Image (cartoon, rainbow over all chains, first blue to last red; front, top):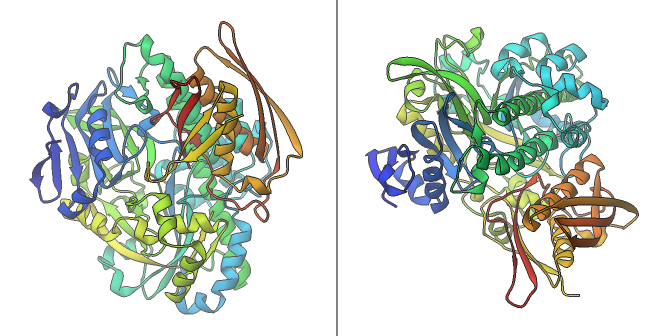
Length: 481
Length: 144
């Protein structure tokens, strides 16, 4: 496939490369990252470029790798009038995302009790296959959780009022309607509120050191003071509830496309016109799943606060356990961008991509509006993660989107052939990172070598000017399912 | 009976892929069910203590397989069960009718050698074919 270099960090596949492409495909990557990308990325992003109503470009972020329909790292914006909505552009784990919680504690405070803290967290935040959450709710209360999201948590005492200002969209996407959600989805999700899941999901205790702060002013504005400050990062999503909604609607769209005369190059790109009854029903169900994920990460935050309070024998408020921010990296949103000189509402799909609005944008909470939206980028459990902020340039360059993490470079089987879970656990302990995992084979699959170099990924989008590095966060303890 | 499954390593970068075979469609479905749960746990350690019945139908056999595996994933979460025995009856009239009995027990992280958690069956490279020798084969990619 012909891939033309536009700049050192931007590559383009012209529409002439595949029949049916309506727009070019653009990939953000350093030359090294581009060379390492699997061929599936180029195949999939050019398929996305064929979808009806797509605007400007089909985009892929530097952490891109092969996915289902869209590649992971895929971003595409569609006209509301003649464009489509596609579950493959959001992912099975609707609103898989990241939350970052800061503390007033430092490594010196936490290190002596780290093992105890990890054990308490492991008990309070269940992970792995079949894990059940501590929140016991009836199925009928699920309707309130899926339509109110974070607001339900705060009402129930699982959140602080100020958490609402520190979660994307206030932790509640509008338009969720429980009538568009199947009984199967409710039954899958009802016992899972407050659980991590498995695979690449985790709860990680990290440290912000002075030498890893790139912008001290920005760091302080986001509640990071450095000096080996301890923070906590959570990566998880909507659990079985969201997975079932995605399954249900992929099935609906698979047969609905005939009705609308839509053909797609990949069955996982199943879609429907945005304004169709099927499209609107999925949008509503997707909002329900997104709200469930925000609620899930909020309940987990509540348990993290309990754990710290228990181990350090102090109120969580006095320990400074504030949410820094919470972002979705698998979601579709209606947002306004300039198209042909006019402000235009578009449906932006982000699959393994994080929104990164800049200073002044009204969607950014007042607390951060002068600085830009915080962007939480999860790395592998051996290499660490990043906190960045969005920029105004992102809005014209990438529909306000940037990377979400490292992106995998090798299959799970290859990772397990490379190292055993127990050996990896020992190696990480030798490097000062404690790990508790439900599945040792699952742990091996998440070895650092199975992922791209997170710094190269983050540096790419920093160089492009779409998201700016604030601080790199180093892991000291990790829980995996 | 010659039902079997094989995990296809390195076929997708982040998830679970298997190929299931059977002399009959019913055997194919049984093999696919077992492969799905073997990807999640050591089914050798699962006791067949609890019984569930599943009834499904569809005009197309590939979509029926998708629905069958999706239903098993739903039961894994909704009922908290891992299954190890699958007894499937499949009949085709105007459409394919499936009646199955599956047996397993509640998920126990201490005993079951848990592996990856299946989120969903995907349509990625999804295929059900009848082979030249009259047997059946399916390729399935599961998002984990």
